[in-house]
Image (cartoon, rainbow, N blue to C red):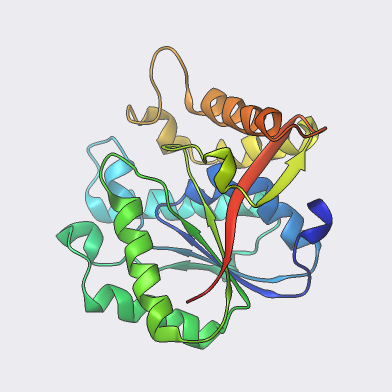
Length: 230
């Protein structure tokens, strides 16, 4: 499936928080950059609640923005290609038309050929609400687009649901971990790290397990559910 990675397309990646796109598809992003695709990575929220410190929220947002810029630069993505939407539902906890309109406006401005959206179920439901907003914007968008669903750390794909995957070896896993390590604040996040298994081990173990379950020759893999848009 490596030969099926898009080239010279306009690609829009939605990430619920800064770091989810690295966890779920960091190597895929790097490979798509190498193939000359035009990028936008859109963060639905700034993820300030994931910064465990006494800083005020506006400072926490800046922390996560800076981490996202550094992390994606490791993969070859330029700062100008990052969009921080800071959607209201992250505070209100109820997605509404204002959220959908912001996503729709980005779609109609950028006009992507391919969209990636994170669909796993996180403890605070931010990922689910984010994917709901993207789904509603896609309905309004009304232009045929290829959609790839990916998952962050909270949920694994069932093998039967993976119809696109990117296999890779240790050097690219090392690159992915290097990018993930730029999200310094998240290594103090107790939701992502516990005494038995930290975030990096969770990510490497999962990518290794997927490659094994798919019976690939590569050591690691990132998986996706690919479909036509609505």
